[in-house]
Each structure stands twice: as C-alpha cells, then as structure tokens.
Length: 107
Image 1: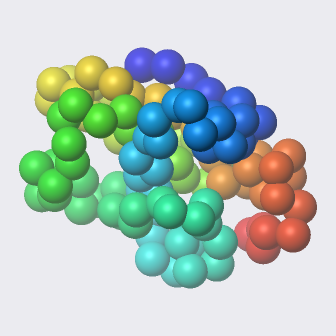
Image 2: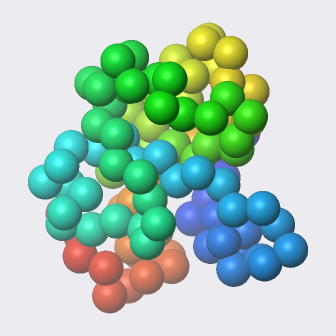
Image 3: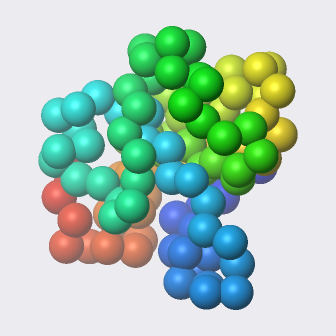
C-alpha cells in the first residue's frame, strides 16, 4: 500500500495526463456532508465488507477518512482481499482542508 499526502493527491488530480483514481471516502454520511473532495465516492467503513464487490479490483483506489486512521484500516482490508492498487491519504480530509482547500469546512 502506498501513502500519499494531500498536496501530492491534489497534484495527481490536477494532472490530466494521469488516470484519475477512485476516491473512496470511508467516513460516515454526516462527515461526508460536512466536507468532501469533489468526485469522491462515499462508502462508510462499516459498509465496506458488504460492498467490496462494488469496487473495481483493477482501479487505483485512494482511501480517505478524517485523519487517515480509518482509511488505513480499509486500505489494509482491501489489500488482504486482492486489491492491488491501494493508496491511503495521510492526514485525511483534514490535511486536504488545511493544505489544499482552506475554504473547506473543518470538524
């Protein structure tokens, strides 16, 4: 599993030459409603085992949570289940709000 910073992810998303990853937001609904990265797919952590087949095994998946701990657990779970291109956003959506999008709501 790879780790990526908010600034690195922002650069990736801004680079039209790179294939866009799946942004998998594993927070709860209320957290996602408070703030999220445009284009992110909400799949709360507790729903991942039941919804794992909804994810493309061949896609690059960036796991996102509030500070990076839950997403790290989901990333490890996905790897154990055969997903090979998994990336964890270190610092989570909070780091994104601080480093990339200061106008984003923080909680």
